[in-house]
Length: 230
Image 1 (tube, rainbow, N blue to C red):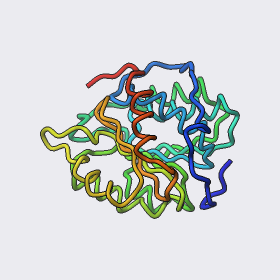
Image 2: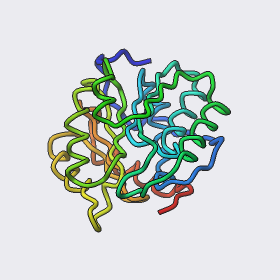
Image 3: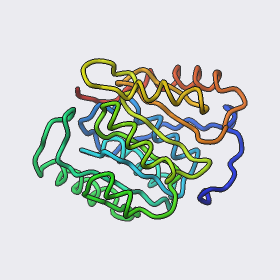
Image 4: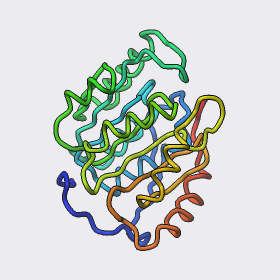
């Protein structure tokens, strides 16, 4: 397990292990095409903490859980959501959270999962310490995405990873792509264009050759799409 805030060596592609996971659940969600990458990210980095903002059914969260379970890690996993929806997902009833809890209890009862059913700002006031992986998948307007990033960036370890979903969506009020365009020149990043786009930001340099990493990961993961809706 990574010690929070410790130095991590550069990732070299010869040392990155690709897995062939069997996911215990097929859930609806626009993150389906990124599950294999999310799984491999956890298996390779072996984080001490993962925190997700915007969980819904849990398609991404349970991909992380699957990796933790399969690898026998002691990772602490935080799921933060109101489970009420927003302007992009639409409003939904209690069945979404009930479905999430059913999967968590049925497949991942031994994992250290912390569920905060609250808004992101309130969760920030209650969250202590640092997380190694932060997944931002809340409301996707530019203003909301930037607010979430600025509110939570200091909760990520110095060598941590931040994931941004929907960086390829440019229609309507979607604005994560604007935030992503602002951040990319400042950090090492990888951008996936499939499944609505996923931005992967490394707070500290991890790659000797970032362009090669992005090329190889796109070739590997963009062709392994999972179930998705929307």
